[in-house]
Image 1 (cartoon, one colour):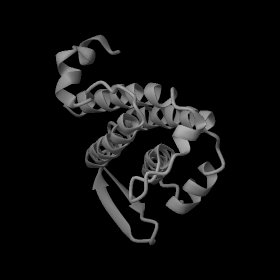
Image 2 (spheres, helix red, strand yellow):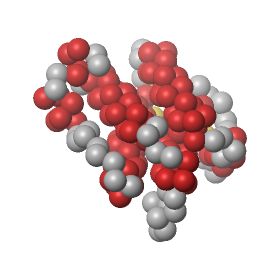
Image 3 (cartoon, helix red, strand yellow):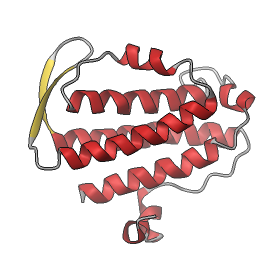
Image 4 (cartoon, helix red, strand yellow):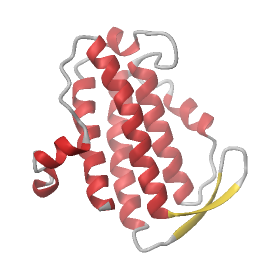
Length: 164
């Protein structure tokens, strides 16, 4: 089941990534106020958070703020390209750690935790779904038609069978 969810994660992110590529630079940077801020801010957080978990799984201590700082100067095209690369790297990590039961990592505050790797994978998928929904809201506010990316739509389309 977890591998099906991870396959869904890849598919859904790809759907939204492709629509986000259609935004002009001004649309990508447009401030909406509040927590959502901009499409750029949502993508930056999605990429940064996934990258942080990749580092944690590999026992590479880094701060979330350092990851965001390293991404913050990227233009729209490079940030979206990085999103795809980070998703590809996450899949590599899933494959690397599929036989592991748990991993110990440190948070940005230096606190150590040990979690089952499958719980971490599920967290990344769930976290991405939450923020992808926020990005979808922004895309629709910018006049883009966004196909439903709920898990059940993925299943109904048979994407989990075809690998698309």
